[in-house]
Length: 394
Image (cartoon, rainbow, N blue to C red; front, side, top):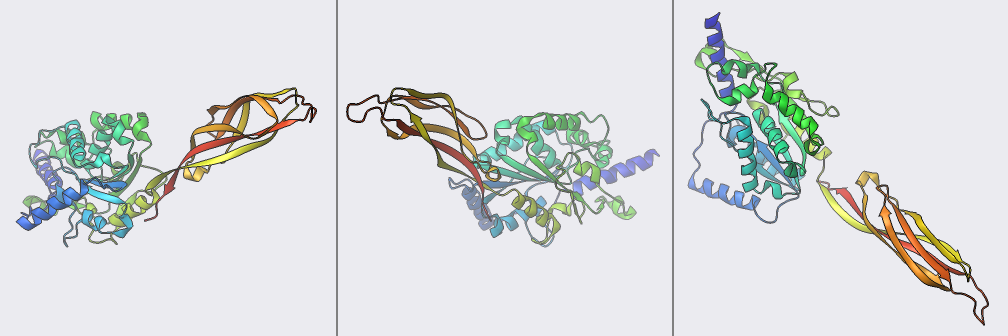
């Protein structure tokens, strides 16, 4: 039995290693110069309204998104006219393939610092594509940085073990990397329990949409003995990959294993089309400000009397589809004839529903020799400053 556990644990560690690594490619001088130029463009002052951030999983790197045919997911998006309002950033953080020393909390901070250097938080909107451990680190990072989390619209997680993975539980027998402890599927996994509790209890992040995709194929073991035994398994189960995600969008099954789930071969691949659908269901928003007026007419007054109110309610129509809200309002007297001793009008407050509460007072002009005692009249004109959100078609 012990021999079986040892062999299977070795296979389990092979699964995790295979799930993230690609053969290293040494860039040429020309390629390095091109990458540096691309990085400068991302950091330029002319940032696009939104940025799409790719966050790899354990033992991964920038190449975790490259398919066998050479297609590179970040580049596929960068060159897609349907994402013209977004910059693309590929994040990196250190997770060596053996005996790592960083905890999830430490890596979440390293991730945040790297994104800050890449000007991610200078964008108006931020969205994430996260693989495996990357989804957990993204959530931990956003919980710890609520001001930056306010910019995040949604996270799309691919095979993220929200309830842990038994593969990690077995692998930690032979590797003391603290990340494997955080990824284990035991019922007393304090990291995952605390992470979900903090997410649901934080107003800063609980509004962020979480969309999920899960692996539809087993992952073959990378170790030699694993290949000989034809060992294979689901690295992250359906239930673990979909726990805590939005219920109004069904989790997406991707016909790929844990490795290839984030390596679409082209723009027709399920992983790509799922993200595209989520992205365009949550379009980039332009904030537009405008001024709309409403006039209350027919405020009459006898020549020797006063017309006043402490709470004249003046409404304005708001479009809920555009999330319109009144940010300020001011009032003035209009169409005034034969009145005097004017006080106000003053907007005392504005209700969230778009009703201005106005205080005013004016008197009739009094009796005259030529006209006798004519009535006076005036109108109250309220200027509403309105902010709305207009979706941008891409």
